[in-house]
Picture: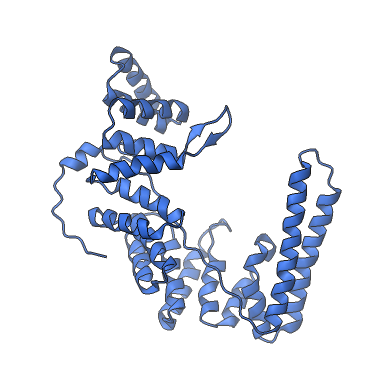
Length: 354
């Protein structure tokens, strides 16, 4: 079906090669078909001939998520160009939340939370979505406005749009635990553990993050119970301190010592293997860099051990997951409307100010 559409549009463009609407439609078909190089060429051409909101938005989205080809096998993101285009679109006060969501997402990812908040609030007023609510919650979280963050995350989860993700409600739970909403956080943690267990892929499971809610509430028994079921060698060493501290707090001093030694020994063996490895794929610089990384990890564990045995509680590091979406007008995969359809639509619905 898509191949037929691509071929039909290709023939029409041959008869009318400067028709920006046809070129834009062809780019959308190519994108859905998976021909990214040709899609980029035609997104750029459409935006050059007719730089309206739809064509500019779709080009900015492509620059941000796909970039431009450097050679046959590699691409380079063009985030700055995407930002510049989106800023110009925003000046026109578009009727769609797409530009606001996308630029808000980019600024959130870059840590420009104040700028992102303004954009995401505008997006929300146009149409609340999981993405703009979740990412607004991230901005509040990093500004230590945890009550507001929790409410955004909770509302994002309720506005799930059938996406199978627990991340917004997990972030809500972490905020609740941080501000001392003990009963609510514990109930939410229990429900999250039940839901997370339904995922088959270990990478989709969230038990290690859910456990953080118990750690923040000083429920070290439950935290250790969860972490004892995890393969901790799959995690970076910076994830270990809360578990090791919890063992120490529970009086399991010998096990705490053993866990430190096991991970340090594993790192030392890994380092020796790299030193002996004569695989030609290892260049000298990369090998030296990896060895230095392992040395730093070993030192981190040794310092952590000293701090824990002095009674210093390590921080549970949590970073809320950024929510991303497709913001391509006329996308044939997600059946998004064209911008002109949104502009003509009268929106008389009341919205709630965040």
